[in-house]
Length: 140
Length: 140
Length: 140
Length: 140
Image (cartoon, rainbow over all chains, first blue to last red; front, side, top):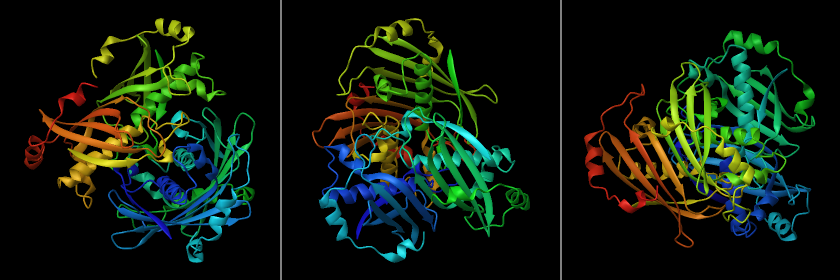
């Protein structure tokens, strides 16, 4: 399992005093990019390499509100499903190990003209080796 | 059907040249607040009235990328489902009437201590009268 | 004077219950793009035309906090200053005509390689005809 | 001197392929909160303690564009100036030690009703001991 740690920023809160729900998709992107970079897929010198991750759909299930200063561990797992890449996520509060949210995003390879393109063989091979925990998904 | 119009801002784009996917949840919130305000539920003088809309889950299905300057019509429909309020959304490009995205969010009443609270009867009554188009949902 | 109207969104607030200060630069961009588009400089079909507006510096002076649902009128004025384009802004609460903030941004023409480029003569001519209210600037 | 490290996120870029200028104020907030927390002023268990940092004005000077994946060191220095707290910032690209931006924000103590309140003596004492590099300021 691949994870990052994210500390909730003041600017990520809203007037309810909690993290605005749109930011969860940003936390997921943060761990997804870190995962892709750790695997050698995204090259920061060539930002267009991040574009293979074009988003097809997203889903988030909120279990607990997150607050300013919370330390969140964001877990990610990936797998292939036909032409799509699926990622699922789990947000865990580091202070008490509670799950704050589950998430899911699916992606497709796009070229510069926003047309679907075949995934690189090395990425397909890499995803075949990933772990996929079925229970996360059941929460969505 | 209730709708707003949203013109895509420069700051809503990312380096792929399209609207960043996290912003779709903000467009949905924009129409949800406008809907709630038009129905007399959200009172801007009492921002805490917006808090009844605490987000439980969200889902977005992307059909077409959106670009800087695009004029989007954002449609919303709501209904009750047990203790939850469900909203569904449709994003339509005004230039060519193409659907850019479908979405769904569910909500629960929360008080200031983030505990679930019963929905006000006038809101329940209001939601019972709303239209719900089953076909939007099928895209999610 | 050129102006737009902006209604404060829920997602633009933070846990202090007011608009997060980083959003003021987005409101300024919103009116700047609207101004440039009204003048025929920015063409939404060619998003790269917006890039001439590369930001060199920004300044904001806050006079009053802005709240969820506030209707803000955002005024803009522009002028040339050597190789730079200067814009200044005034945020006015429509409910009571109070000034909520003043702002200033300066810009330079950049090409696709992030190198400075000469401004188009039609833009220079246009800016020479703009009004510039000296008193806004004094608040910064 | 107090510093944090910030890695530029995909969602912090815009269609020019660089970090959107509004995000610099968020980077400054990030280091300011980290500074205040390191000094024992902001307590994450009491988010209202962050509110003493109400923003009066902000200024940013951009020297170099920042890109997706850039590692930025964000330096901060603080001092008192009458009733205001001043902070100044320097953004340095860790890859080549180039300064990407300078910044400045000033703040005032506000209570929950958005009224100015006197700063706590321990904060005043703390700020008197801080270093202030005059040359950063000259760039603004």
